[in-house]
Length: 220
Ligand code: GRF
Image (cartoon, rainbow, N blue to C red; front, side, top):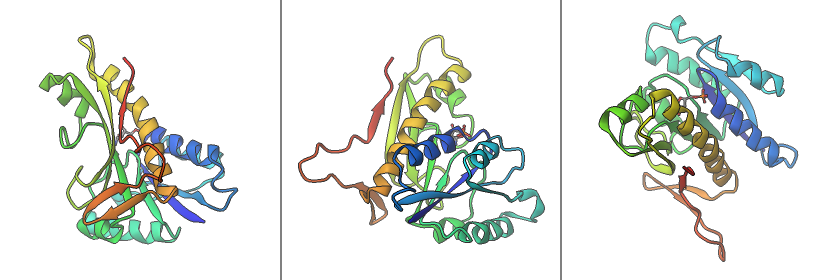
């Protein structure tokens, strides 16, 4: 049984999509994979109640209790490792991670970011996309490296930017695609199709099947 640990800071809608994916595929019943824990750095993260309602172990570790990032990340690693993770999924986890943390989980940690990377790293991506006047926006699932919002790209979604869009309307449509591409990436990992090689991530295609689409275009 593979253990997945999901890190959140807020509403946790991506975490919910991942938990629903695990349930729908019946991975836990088959002894394949389960969400071992949902961990938050904020006690008021809305997603904690959802995880608990699904019988998933939850834990809170407030970064405010620590003098700095190094100390917090060391405690966070100890907490996560207690769940014997095979995969760590950052799902709206709003903390910059230290190199010690990203190295510790190298090759087994993914993030979702609400932009088509490498455009619009950091916060306020929807505002930045509107300000830049781009006509296509979206989200990215990527392997996590020491560099913020950087690392090998697994799958990206594309959303048309409409003339009447506000940051809120755009965020809503991008988030809907996140709920599709993150479970897709998780499914490739669970199926053993996600291979981390030479700093990149390759998605294997079983013989006789069409290549996996690593792009999702939201219908307009
Ligand atoms: C998502 O847009 C995610 O890409 C970003 O933070 C947001 C989290 O939303 N990193 P939720 O907590 O998963 O609902």
